[in-house]
Amino acid sequence: MKCIVCVKQVPDTSGKVAVKPDGTMDRSKMAAITNPDDLNAVEAALTLKDHQSDVKVVVVSMGPPPAARMLRELLAMGCDEAVLISGREFGGSDTFATSQILAAAIQHMGLERDDVIFCGRQAIDGDTAQVGPQIAEKLGIPQVTYAAEIQKTGDTLTVRRMLEDGYMTIQVQTPCLITCIKELNTPRYQTVRGILECDQKPYQVYDYETLKDEPLIEPDTIGLKGSPTNVYKSFSPPVKGAGQMLEGSGRETVDQLFGILAEKHII
Image 1: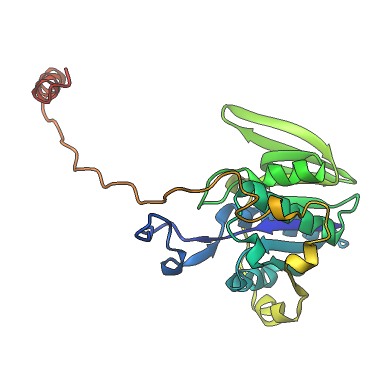
Image 2: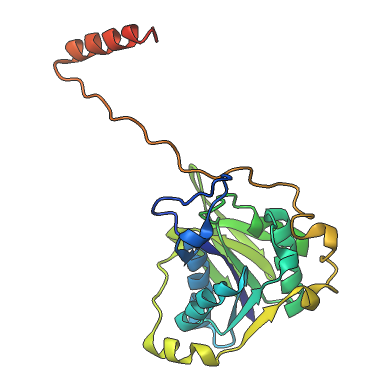
């Protein structure tokens, strides 16, 4: 069986977000990392591989050629194959077009009866949580989102998914798609042996010519032309002013607060 893991290289937003004069994100001035939730998806696939000898883990990413470094790191973690989807025709894709291209790439690989597709819950640069579910819809397979625990028995997965107010347990048959959250597992590190051997593992690049004959690939369904949404502007939130601490008894602080609000004509 194949475990296909969709991953994305994203800018490291833990620091200051670099923004161009036109208001768009300047990715060239920000460090690139593997999307954190996608690492949980990779670990979920590798865990299945640890328990079943016939599992092959394939990582797939759409992005520019520099994303190859990220894929090599995932091969060093234990993944078996990597596929980079890259081409000018794919540039500017929103979540709808991106899922269209990823689904076409998975079709090109061949989706078999016992295969499982893993995705991270969402990417930290867009936070939409749309790509995984859209891939499942376009492939016509069942999906389970927000997976916090996964167990596999034969061609059935039992998934415990996190909700806002509790958990839900669902059984789903393969082939299927699962989106993973950070509570699912702790991603493993690369190994020395994995680093030494990662360059020897299969690595492919799918360009437009590779995928153009897939049913999902049409000029008006990919890239900017196939994207019904676009990001108008990205920016760092304004820095808030320092807070004011009120001291005294409960009654005294309430009186102070009322005085401040009245002075500002809020009340």
